[in-house]
Image (cartoon, rainbow over all chains, first blue to last red; front, side):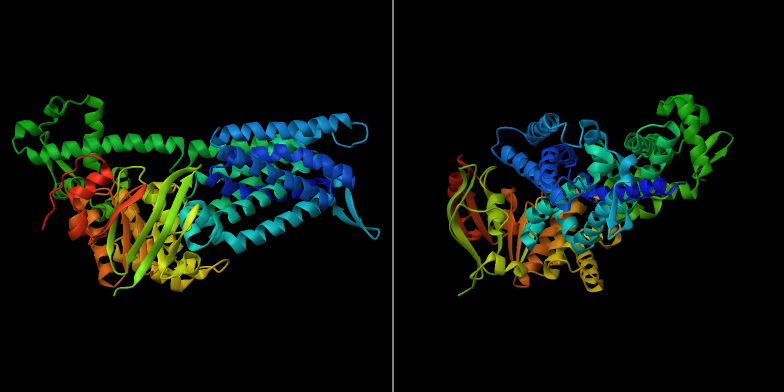
Length: 386
Length: 244
């Protein structure tokens, strides 16, 4: 690996981390689309900033562009507050207009400005190592590394300082307000961080893909955990994984780095969406099937408990009596046998002590609906896991 | 003379210039268990939110023990409507209850062992200790309401505001909750509850406020919970049998 390759991977990873942190809260606040709006509407800010500073990596440009991001959020909220249009419509109105102003500004000044629409949309990660920070003649590394590094350090600092405030205002804004944690201060704080991060990442991955880096890792992590801290860690890991594997995919295919990173994010999400242990599509299907079987099992055990007469308990009669198809009866019968809940004697089925006890407990639960009673049964039965 | 816990003067609150509460004057004495009743859209939740500074009134003032709410946050606990939060949020029952301690911590400071212990005690009080590590979406509606109650208890406040704590809970939970509210009153706390079920008002509460955009009446249940006030509030000829 050349040093440029290593630098690109480091920059991509830092961008991924810096995006994943605010992205997690955006996803939990159901504000994923606002990051799309910010990423597009900072364009005029970048162009104006570039006219003033003549340097794409100037901190002033980043602040100016981030300000456009905040203005977007304010505009969206203002339009929405009039009650004339809904939030998604307001978002859809504001950002394309700001973005197109930026596009026109670039086109009008195409000859003077080292900035083109392709780069704005898709970023120029591959060129990042060429623009270096030179301090008194010493090469300090790529400028974008310093920029995204600084943004990341600030983001992490804010995350550690205000984790509790972010959590409470995201979960319950009303409570946060009543306790004195102003939800609007936290909201605009988060919007500012998202805007600054977007500008910082913009140069590397472009307006469209920065959204993916904010939203996809968080959405993936959300499927895997019920713990906010873990969700943050997972989403950072997914971001970094996609950044590095995306880089190598681009290398192998000789394709756009930003495009490949986003493709990896998509692949990762799809895999988790299908295979996540409890929230994944396959797990849900399996659980539903299991629950169906377990309801049948309970129905069957109840039948045995309610009927002492042998005619009702003969294997062959079960099909007719409980009105199931043969396959289902066999599955249920096998499950009951496997769990030692029934015994077979000359094709006459009867409950074992364990089966009898289980049936009473389950019925008791269904009637009283008291969770405590079935706590120990949850490990064996999906039915009781809620 | 009992102290006044909450004093509201000339309070008017509007959404987009449409008044939801109109010139409310209300004194809530210390130590009452009070129901706020009124039809849908009467401004019951709005009243609570305005007292707590969540909504800004266009006129009037609210004081908690003679001082503005901002100075008295520590004295007040709030239980919002259960439907106001996203129960799929990645967190546990214990963590939600811990949020009740955030107010006393202030900005930046993190909760520690002391806060955790207080949260566990509150969970125990509402009978939810076995579920402390349960993800909140895995709790039943009644259990979620208990978690909210525990979160208010952990604040160890003097005044409790609850927005429909009995909504969507089963009878057992309702009794459990009202018993805790009665205990709070016994301990000298003031409890203010937005309530829907008129039948249970005489049984659960000792104080009641009738509200329908304007204040209709406020006072002890035994004196003012009558057909006259109900009719004024709900606009139809309302008959409730009051149990003596």
